[in-house]
Image 1 (cartoon, one colour):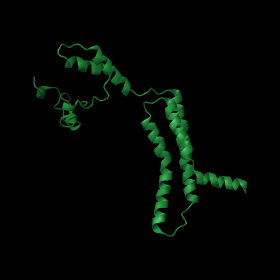
Image 2 (image 1 turned 180 degrees about the vertical axis):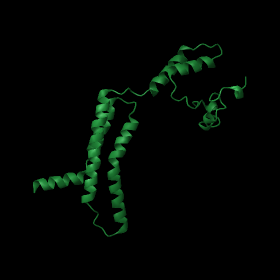
Image 3 (image 1 turned 45 degrees about the vertical axis):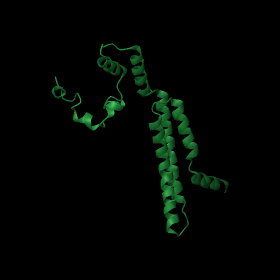
Image 4 (image 1 turned 30 degrees about the horizontal axis):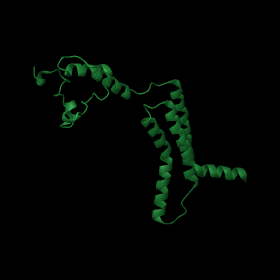
Length: 174
């Protein structure tokens, strides 16, 4: 049976698989398309079918299990979900604080370059809370909950809307 006779959606003749790989990936030991997140059983079955005797060695089985474990995200727990919700609300408050800060401040300059850079800085201040929250959410997907919470806590300390805080302090002291 040739590769052309294989079932649709299987084998090397699948146009989707060809579109997701580069020529020569097999030579360099690249991962087959759509197999990057394969489970340990799938990897062991592939190893067994690839070996001439059909046996899976202990090294191949341990290696495939290690690959499967390293790619499995940590399961969602109640504490992780609660921390995400609390920090989502906190970062929403930070963005709202920056919106109020941007409305109450201006560059005070008549030069075009200064005014444009000031407005770009205001835009970055507005977007920073959303960007930090999203980056931590994405980059700590497989990390423990305390690592994720630590990065979010650091972000809240860095991204405090200081212009609004200073205005509130000045009004409270007056």
